[in-house]
Amino acid sequence: MKTRLIAIFAITAFAGSAFAADVIEMKRGVKFDHKTHQELLKDCTKCHSTAEGGKIEGFGKDFAHKTCKGCHGEGQKGPTVCSGCHKQ
Image (tube, rainbow, N blue to C red):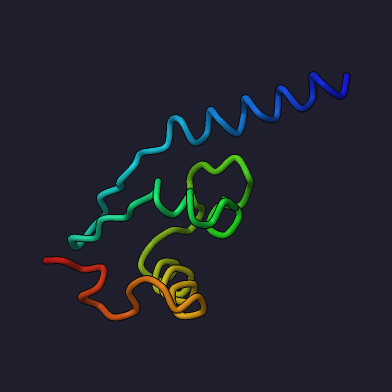
């Protein structure tokens, strides 16, 4: 039973990462490198509500500016100024 649960978890985790887009193009010239963030963070719940990922409820300008910019500032990695993400 324990082996089956581990196998189901592994398949679910792999399937989520296998089907996620490598780079997501958003509005206003923002390109989000999802694959790189997956590899660096290894914790989908930093952005998603579940470990399986999926659509981010309430995602938009306010979410991105608070969550993404906040994480980049805390970790001192990644862009925190407008032109860092908005490549128009």
